[in-house]
Length: 70
Image (cartoon, rainbow, N blue to C red; front, side):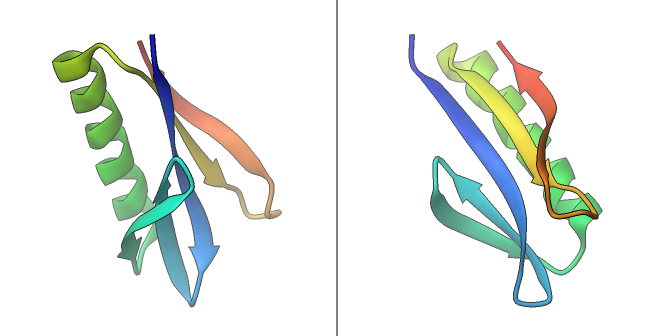
């Protein structure tokens, strides 16, 4: 079974959402980026059965897993 990762990173004064390393969206606020990433991950799992993790940079610049579906 395929797996994917949605990662939210600080970029250009906002937050860039990467889908398996490819930029897909940019958000001015971290919370909105996380909301959309969680929604995308949940939908991907429900519709395609794909295990999907959501990762985000924290205030220290470290990437941590914040949600997982599947």
